[in-house]
Length: 173
Image (cartoon, rainbow, N blue to C red; front, side, top):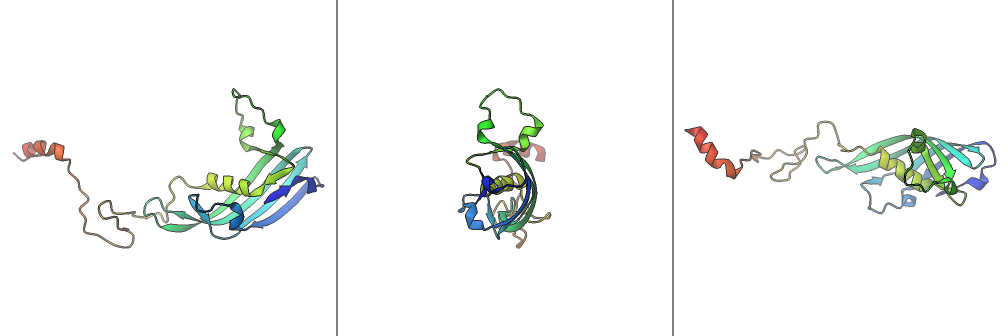
């Protein structure tokens, strides 16, 4: 879904859109799945060829727990504060010092901003490094692979290195 910048005639415009999950084009290639429509509430400010987007993205994602591998729902509420510049303003120097303000800049071309791309980038940035279905998730048993949150197994998780068995016999003496 594209935001047509030619249609923005006022200096400040509020845009509210709901993006259906199918438009994001994830097709199972991502670490998350969008459960419901993604809600965009953006304020677009125009300054010549520069566009500032501020607002919020709300979505409900389904992601995999890093311990037990079960899927769980993850509510995302992302604040947006991005400056869009025309792609021609992008400098192709490889030895450029990256300033703090450069981290909030993005580029558009053909007088369009791809909102689906914006949403997917923000989802990637909002993902936790190790998502957990709950704080007390016990994960999987390393021996039998059972989910410790729902079943208790009788596996012995202690492991002894067979290379050190000779030393262990010395301790017993």
